[in-house]
Image (cartoon, rainbow, N blue to C red; front, side, top):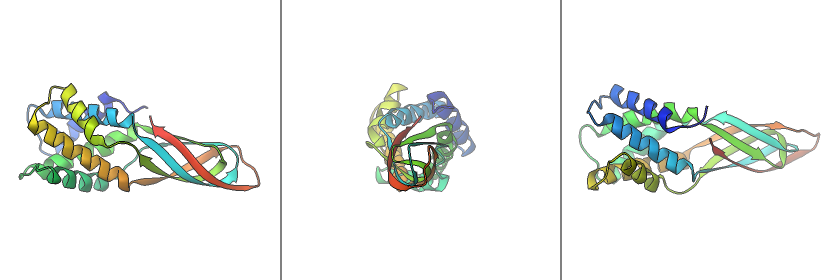
Amino acid sequence: MPLTPAGLTAALTTNLFAAGNIGMKTPQLAAGIAAGVMIWNSTLKVTTVDAGSLGVGKGFLPCVIPQPLLLVGLLGGLASTGNVGVRLPLLALGVANGLALGFPQGIIMTTHPTVGTGMGVAKFLGTSAVAGMISGFASVGMVGPGPSKMATGIGIGIDTAFAAFTCPVPIVGSASPSASGGTGFGAIV
């Protein structure tokens, strides 16, 4: 199943409500975050460091980013942009839970030109999520200084989480008796 705005919006809305964010604009906030993630994801690249047998292989696995990594990044990102208050932890918790459940809808697909069978370690590189998040908020009518400040904080939080996120990628493909290493590339689809 691909990463979609509708799937992310549903995961975010449910988890924002579950964390106590029960305002009338909660579904709009969820849609803005989902749109921002989709814009940012279009610029995100996956690179891998591979080891295994010589050949050509592919990697395919869900994008499972740990919720605590997202939560710490979001708390820091929101606080660093001046988003403060007693409800801030509930907002960060709802967004972190929603993204932790939404991102596995997307699949990390990689190509490994020098390793046919083995393992790779994936790292995520790309532009900052801030611009995508501001655009995503604007696309659902959330504009002005307040929403821009929140979008910036959420974008910084996502950047922080993905900068620290690595995951193992199993490589499957043609194999040979010769050992090989190298790098792979891909994206979250």
